[in-house]
Image (cartoon, rainbow, N blue to C red; front, side):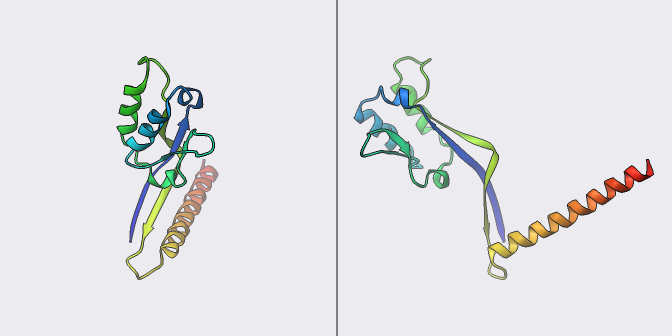
Length: 130
């Protein structure tokens, strides 16, 4: 089995800044990102998160470079910021076929629970000794 994790992306769209862009600039901003995490809402022409943005975001720099070039002044706020969450992750588990991925995760959680229970008991024993 193979297990990986990555940070959950937090995508902040500065609607006030985006409103200063032309439609062509909005499209350029959407197109520059290789992860395709942004889209243009057909009804409002606002930039929005793409439907599967959380799954595709890899924190590339193309978006930052493009919007830096679009800013009227370097000190202006970003149109879009993408940052990694510090408390939310995406875990992926792939099975080699012997066990299903969900069985692997549940088995790992049971082992973790047993080890944490053991640790809690040892801490209690130390309290009794002291």
